[in-house]
Length: 227
Image 1: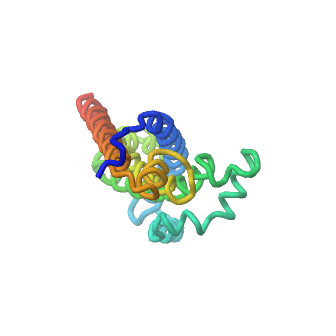
Image 2: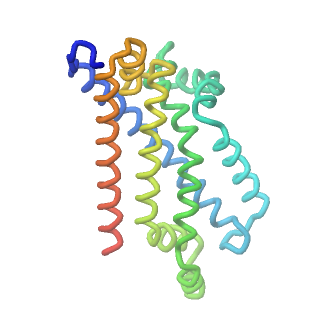
């Protein structure tokens, strides 16, 4: 069952570093895109502070279209775009490695984060927003000092969910386009060589990562709720 019973520990640390590198950068850029999109979805929806039905429908439809595409298809469908982006910032030929995987990961995660942000911001009590409007607060103040501030715990949990989703997607990218990371180890050494021990250890590492991230996210969210 376990070929040779050699855990090959030297495989896992570099792969773990690659996974953290891809997940960290992807969630950073996806959050930079996702939060403004989430705010836009909320403030332009009917009845909100900057109602713009056309803008809301266009943004909402684009997000739904991207979210409808499975990551495994998105990964290959946007290869020309990935080549273009990596060509702007990186040396030629890096589009299929871990740097190149970041582009589809961001495209995949940003709309997802935008929807999570939308849900988190909609939890903000409308009465609080109306009270600040009555006091003469500007739209900018309502967005940054009311909506985003009040929704901080939910936003942290939303980013935590996105992080966990990106770990899953990163593992897929590692196996399919040789992006490196734990997914590549599981596919190359575990599946192709049918080494069950490698697959088991990789899965255990991924489970530990997910558990740790969820615990950290829950702790930060609870701390914010006590403020």
